[in-house]
Image (tube, rainbow, N blue to C red; front, side, top):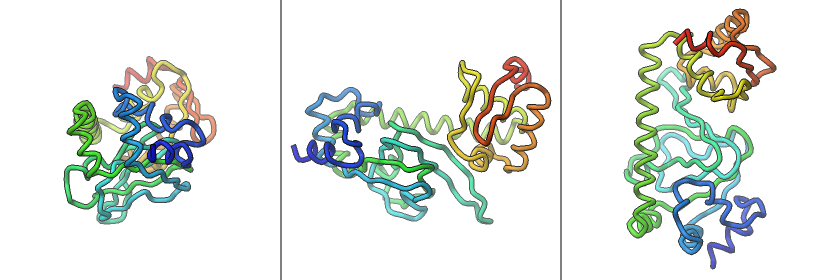
Length: 234
């Protein structure tokens, strides 16, 4: 009951029923309302302003961070101070899972891309629930394997494929079956995630537009004009 009241009234729930914090999180979708109430009892709601850090490299972990609203950027800094965006997460996704299994400090930074609300779950108590509800443990392992696969694919893309190939592939992936793409981040962060400079990204986007492959609308809106043409670059 304590956890239920906490999330009913916290900023994380946005005034909605507390279950909305968890209903859209694949990690907990197999749990019953009573089991979700157990999760709620070990959860702390937090709100972050745009640009605010959720954690920094070197910080101690020990929590699972679930994004309820907004967006979060995970990045690292090279020795020369250059930022590499690793991934961007949206509502329903979580971060910090590695710190649940290791006492090592964080090796990356997590910052809010916009005003965001999150739910923090105490790691030690969550591990006890993972032993009780094995489905949670399996879903954490599944997410870890998917992220490892994405990291390996990113390394492959950067090391083996040209700038044009990388950009064409990510535009096709982001668009899905639609023509319009709204970038979930700044072009600088988008370029960093692709392993290129912002200047290179802007130059290649302009080149794609001149070739009739895409149309650029403002800073974050991209229209796919020639899907087959993009596919031929792969």
